[in-house]
Length: 389
Image (tube, rainbow, N blue to C red; front, top):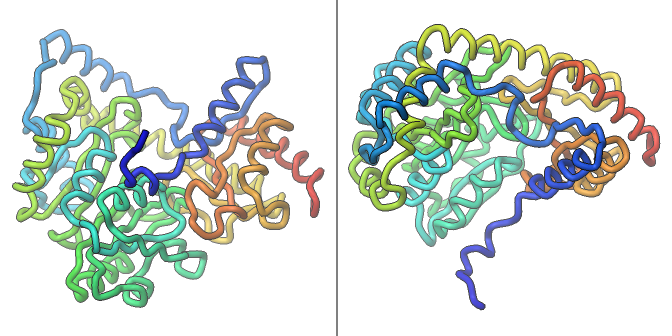
């Protein structure tokens, strides 16, 4: 059988095989601590679930407009007004089947064969894969502590080519949890504008920030494309609902793409998401953000004692990106051994980094503090048995 050559550019997401192995160990009776998947242990808020039940009872199961129900687009617009004091026309909001739907629309609109895309390395692998599937050539720029693990103004200018069409940022980032503050993000906006390119900003973790003020590219420019999701901050991972904020000039072609690619987002999920913006639900979500902040700090304390804490603490998301080069240059084997010997599941860096992935791992602080502390104890035992331990 012959398949499209496009799929050759899509690498497997190795954490999924590790998750499968961890679940198999659990089924065999082992006490596995899951720190591998980007999904906190919080259930979807009850108000959102209740709103879904009410929508189903009311028969809200038919197609909606391809860009989402007007009430939800209005609610998302109001969210930007409340959070950032920015007036965002609801017409510029396109509701999508998950943030992946938003990335698909953006990639199909913005790039084509022969164009180049700049993005940081490491980054979420799907960001690379969507652009590659659209035919773009990727220029992955290695980032580290010196740039705050982000693609900043200097890196954009240094790596921009005559055929570069798009720069893509993720702030806060998966896997590092680091973000650009307003001044540094504004500098990137300016650099991309000076080069005559487009800017696509992944803000999927934008609601989950610690010790810093949240920032959105929406408040800095009307020309950026901004992806967000109900999965992370709003706790709706399995509901598969996201959105794309786009310039006014892009709405008509994006609508045509949405009509043809996925017809419409999930109707019950859209009506459920309306409840996410109610004040009581927002307070519950903020309480969860504060809990994640405490989990981050507890995990940083434990890893610091092991000499593994990152030099720059992450300001957002729920991940730590750790350098394990003192112990291993094979992150996949490292994670597999840690699971088999100590029943702790973490993610190999090769899922996220083109360069340096062999010497890094990602830990998700998605479970309660007692379990994180237990995971650190198990990791300490494991490291003591490694060369260099």
